[in-house]
Figure 1 (cartoon, rainbow, N blue to C red):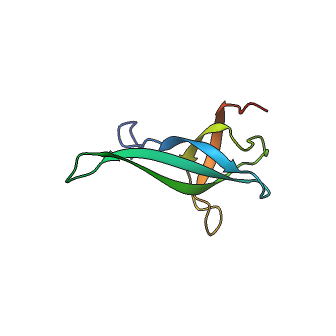
Figure 2: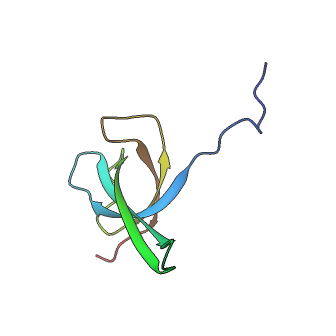
Figure 3: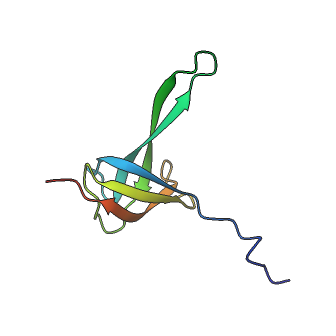
Length: 90
């Protein structure tokens, strides 16, 4: 049975800042989120680091990038670089 467009899952993409590009074909991206504290209603900043695959090594430290969820590439890498949204001032 052919698969319809409604059944296809959307590709999950997020935007973050590159904090390290020292590994070969890998970048470390910081994802920032702001949530509200459940009891005190104060805004709390949370962040997490993910490793993303950068085939052409085009992203540099400080760049704002868009990454997408992909198949497991290595033990830690589950994301791939889609595009450099904004280059850092060098």
